[in-house]
Image (cartoon, rainbow, N blue to C red; front, side):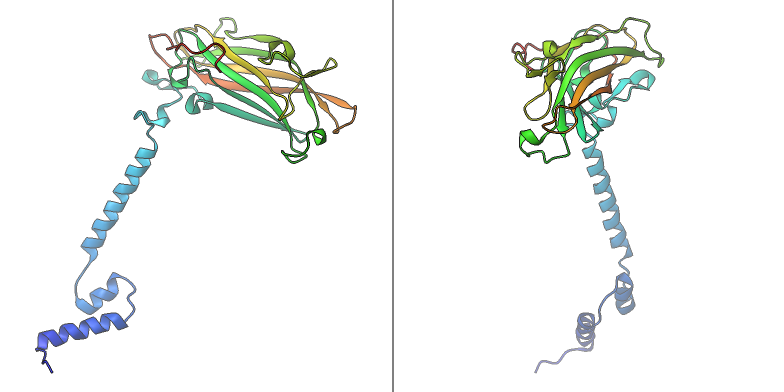
Length: 273
């Protein structure tokens, strides 16, 4: 049998103790060994904090290296900010629920001017939008006959411009629409009923206008707000000939970014949304 010298016996006993005694942290090891691990632990924590902050910083960066926090900044030099989900996200979806009918307005830049953070005062800025109704009183995939029908009649859209001094421009509305949905929509053969207009109940009906143009704006513009008014007629109950009139109002703020250059525009297929 091999004999252990005194130092070796001490080490063996210490190893055995460590395997038997449950450790509750650095203090337990320190009590047994007299060794401190605080410096190593501190180094690990510091590395973790750095890694976390790098991840957070990376998450804020877009693929082009631009910070998402900067998107929507309309006049960076003067720190003027125009709050716009459209400009920050490149799309805006607005929902309004009235009596169990969910009205959804979706608006996004057209392919000709796809970068909402490159919409400048000068030059044409093109967008497309859709408007649709969902009957939430029944399942979305329920038979269509069980859904309340919604018809869209008149559509009225006006706009106003906000300048760098946060005042409204005295210039006339740069974008206006006023007319019957059935004659304005992209669909050449919308489903209409009586004088109520065109059907917009999902999934067989939708109102769409493509490649709408916002033209030149004042040089100190930081934003434009579109004011949508949709006049609808709603079936009171599925299958019944009882109807209610409703007006849906939705505002969409759009940021305009400072630049001496005109808004860049691309050649795209005709009527590409």
